[in-house]
Length: 295
Image 1 (tube, rainbow, N blue to C red):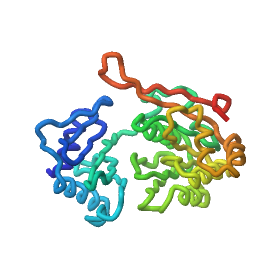
Image 2: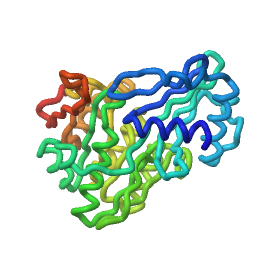
Image 3: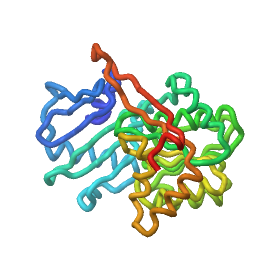
Image 4: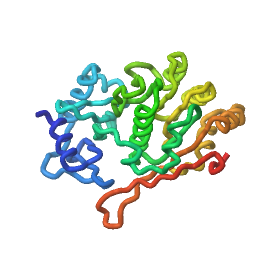
């Protein structure tokens, strides 16, 4: 077993959510929200980090050594045992560093996640924009996957997901689900969203709204009768509209604000709260309708 498979196997067996490989440190594991070193494994050096990075890149179909010419890369790594993991390879102080998110193979249902009833109702909409907001690592992608699974189980539609990378694999149940990966199947979120409208999509999942082009494409898709789900990396869900509007130049902002008000159905706010005994973290969610948002 190679070093990567060994570390991922250890992380999964011990309930970790993330693994970090950084020069001069032992492997760092995040469990229950807390980061700690894997004692006795040994310090990460440039040779080990390069070997791990090249293994990830080779498995993803990229040329070994490509990291010498780019700043960072996100990809999905599937182990020999079939577990899927989101990997971010980046540079720091001239050294390679690696962050690994251990993805669950099981797509939870909305019932299993114990989400508010209002969120389940949003999956039955025919059109509009639904956002899930919260800090990094709060489970936004899992909630979206559960929403897509809910639609896939109870409706008969064409679903297209656009992700970077694809995190959860959806089987075709009642719906037809096509999953596109940015950098592999399409060159940008915005282009994939625009294409989805020509591909007869009923539902579009967008991994994240982070550039004005992507926001604009998502708004247009919702205006033309699609149901669009996406995420925002903001802590205050009430400010979702202002956050997106501020991505645009001043002369465009009022028009974008007006268009958002016409398509935005709700913002689901989510964060993880540590239990009093520090044994685990619990997701706390709130569904904010248009009247609850700062416009």
